[in-house]
Amino acid sequence: MPGTFDRARGRALTREVSPSYAEAVSSYLGTRVPDYEAARRAQEVYFAALRAHGTEVITLPTLEDFPDCCFIEDAAVILDDVAIIPNLGHPSRDGEKESVAEHLSDDFEVIRMPGGATLDGGDVVFYDDRFLVGVSTRTNKQGADFLAEHAKGAGIDVQLFDVPKSTLHLTTVCSSPRSGTMVAAMGHLKESDLSFAEEVIWIPEEEGYAANTIGYGDRIIMAEGYKKARHLLMDAGFSITSIEMTEFREVDASLTCLSVFIG
Image (tube, rainbow, N blue to C red; front, side, top):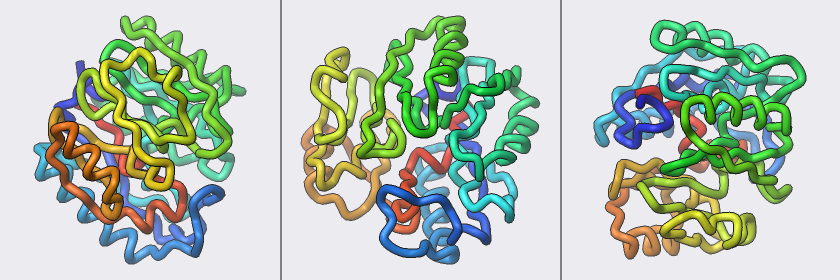
């Protein structure tokens, strides 16, 4: 199955950082105005890391009027041969999804979310036999239920989470880099939330940003600068590529925000 189901991550759909990036929405982690040029340089390093792990990087042109447009993960969720195109949870991002839907329509059946339902792809995590879907300030219950209906139609179960107010998206505080494993940030999720997992690697709360990883089996990409998290992940048998993510963290974004894996 392509996309979300495939940890081989053969192709990634991405989008160039917008020249208006300094106006990107930020409410959780930001401490200063983000730097567009620094973000572009960081994105190139990100692309190089994906390619080094065998991923073909497909890059859409930027959208100058949409500061958050490089966070393309939010604009589509791939379910086998279907692309769910959601209504993004922040009104300033309405309009980002159209070119994503147009591109994906060449390879996928495109299904659009009905009015009133909202969902960001950043609230969706795939774990072996299920989707974890967060109900958050960006994803409402209608949006989560719409995705759940279609996921179950593709033979995948869904587990809903109430995303704590301490974080923006579910992917901000957890990821599943390999089969059987969850990486999760302390202070945001509880042990009972992840009782289904064979292995949970708990990242200390002060380094919780590092719980968002991109996995290729026993190889992962993680954010640079999180020594405790790095040691924990190495002890769990991962080989690690670390990349600088400071400019993206300033606007509440993580590694996975910058890609939709489509095959």
